[in-house]
Length: 308
Image (cartoon, rainbow, N blue to C red; front, side, top):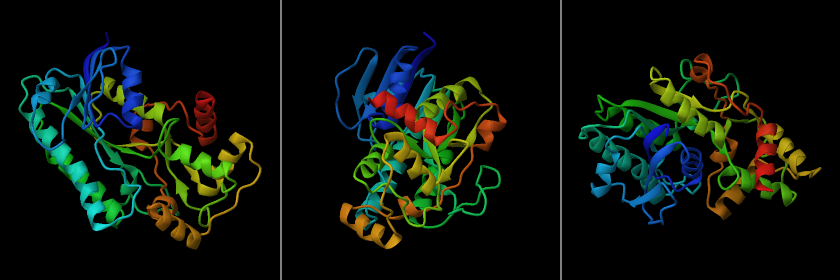
């Protein structure tokens, strides 16, 4: 076995499942920390925790090769005061708790990767944002990102290397943005959203998985790292790629005013669609990381071929 043990906190979602599927054949034991119990699947075992309080699960982090924290309430909701509070606490509390556990271990994980978001950068249509020259934005979603990262880096873990992975919109087959966008296209509503000029920063889920393993093999990589494909594209171009991939010749556009109404009806925020996220993975590229999927069209076709 290549690895002894990998811990996936909040690992029952889209990314957690992709990570577990990738590592299960090379790892003696994979531990998923989840609020919901689940039957063991071979060497993948789920332990129940609430993300706030210490428990028997904590000793399982001893001797782990890697801890990946994916905890956080989905931001695809209306930003009510209650939801805002849950979005922040669901990120800060597990991160703080994991920091206390890791600091108290005799043999702590070698690497701790904490999920973060490429949304932290400002709305950008003029130039791309990277780890060195990117500018932090403003507004609620950015404040969440800043608090989350500060909590992570404020934890005391002298024997554990830490990476905050600023992830773009993850394209995967089972959940997340892609299945929802595909459904829009199939319903004939797959045209541009807003003016279509906003950039979409995306990444294939397998490249996120590949990044985590690459980081284990490159121990000098620490701090903030953008985990995004090197070729973001504009919303209008992305929707065109989706229409082409599933053979739908036309899609009705959705102007901003219509998106406002639709977002209110389905309980989300238009910022998730209209903000221009133009983010590049400078540190990964400079260090020699090679993405499997650099073009959105190729990524979409790959995922759709697996789904079928």
